Amino acid sequence: MELISKRYGRSPFIVIFIMMMLKMLLFRHFVFQGIQADRLLTDAASILTLLLVTELVTSAKWRGTVFHILNAVLSLLLFASTVYFSYYGTVPTYTALHGLDQVLQIRTSVGSIIQASFYIYFVDLIVFTVIFIVNRIKGIRSDGSRRIARPRIAVVAFILSIAISGGYIWSGSAIPNEIVQAESLGFLDYQVAAAINAKKEKDALKNGSVEETAASADALQVSYFNQAENAVEAGTPNYFGFAKGKNVIVIQMEAFQNFAINLSVGGKPVTPVLNGLAKESFYFSNFFQQIGQGNTSDAEFMSNTSIYPTGVIAMSTGYGDKVLPSLPRLLGGHGYESNTFHINDVSFWDRNRMYPALGFTKYYDKPSFENDHFNSFGASDEELYRVGLEKLQALKQQKKPFYAQFVTTSSHHPFKVPSAQQRIAMPDSLQDTQLGDYLTSLNYTDYALGEFIKGLKASGLWEDTVLVAYGDHSGLQTKDNDPAWVSEQLGINYDGEVSRFNIPLFVHVPGAEGKVVDQVGGQVDIMPTVSNLLGVSLKDEGYTAFGQDLLNTSHNVIGMRYYLPTGSFFNNDILFVPGKGFEDGTALDIRTRKPVAEFSQYRADYDYILELMKLSDDYVRLLPKRAP
Image 1 (cartoon, rainbow, N blue to C red):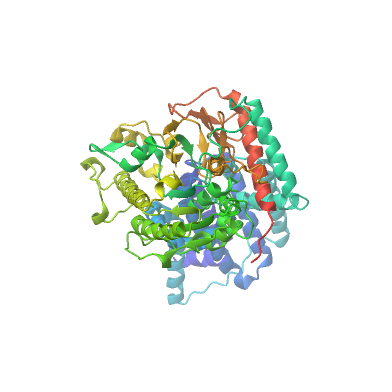
Image 2: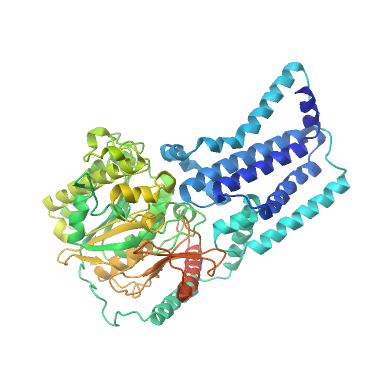
């Protein structure tokens, strides 16, 4: 050990390089499910660039220490990114650091997805630490003074490694699919490419105009839907003003997937309340999540603004300083009070900034609720609705129309419901499984919503209120729930993409007949749909929407770019996921869940959604900042 430590201590460059390369290989194994030899050059070049900079600019006294620090930092980054990928299905960029302060709030969820094998990233650090301690005990010190090469050779090697990395970045940065891009560039060069693209986007917006961008978005949508021969005739839209003057309650249900609707387990319905609501509401069965890095908070953002998340930062964090065109702000101009209810601290995902940006009159967060310790977030959905109902009854007494948003948490990952609140028994085959826990939590969420509806009816609010309920995002983790096994256990056709991202949307309108709507939609479509029902024209009000009114659309395409890569879309027929581009992509029939081999006829949808999301990004970035 003494001999190894002496050699290692005097010239750690090669050893650290080998260790860092092994970790890059491990990252590719965990994330990309394989190691391609032709992709290793970009990893080697990026690591060499990092180490050679240290070799050239660091003094002999500190060189070895800095090498160790770089190795430790890379270990932490790759570990965190591997965990991140396990949860989100995408490779994070440096922008994900904005969300690090939120991790403790969801530590139960994060901890449950960490695999023991992920800790291999730190094995060498432990070994080196032991060697260091043993040598210090023996009195052996390393001066770390030996260079790997003479300065001139190091400079040449540095220039060569920079050139190789630059070539990979130049050739791969145009790939819209983030996962393919990250695999092509390697982890470190992928971060550099993200920074370069962010700088280009920022520069491109310097002379931009929000009005011109909005006009371009409107023109693109008009052109696309005209070409698609939308069957809805011009004139007054269907259901326009059908609920004019009604209150609006929006329920965002945590991790709620659509397959649970009308599902029975052990002879009992999982969602009896929502099953009944579906019969007397507009029930959109082909509705899909579109969230970005902000997860639940991004769903809140989208449903209220009809603007796409940028995918590189939580919208509440990145755009909480803006004046956001939104439903609360729109309806505020028509005399509505707007309240939002969430049992967590309002600073979680920067909602203390997002809610004023959205124009909510008031928010109710953790101090407003009694903590009945339902889960790691605190209060239960029943407590959420109890407080909410009290506040809404007070607004009714003041004869103020209201827009109220409720964000539920009782079905949050890892889906543990206290035994006293469990209301459905799982069969033996689902005991102690994530699927069983998930269904139990959805059943409780459904029950609590039913109690809230009873309260609305008892207080006389039900018949004067439009109720919108939808899932914010998927719940089941594919790695813990093999789709074939889920299908077998539940007797349904469940797959890891269409079924996973399919969430329910219910819009209950007093006096309107219940109807199952097969039309494909997403969270950007909620605002236009609700506005139409209330008889408020977004166009007349000067609002730009990047979604469609689902009651007046016969053809639709919605984009998704977080849990799936940029360029992915749902239309009335398929889910499309690109490869490097359109031609090498894959498609699934959204109804049969079977692969679609021939999808060339959907090229226009791919081009449209890429352009629409780019315009959405430009639009939100150009919006004016609000006063502090």
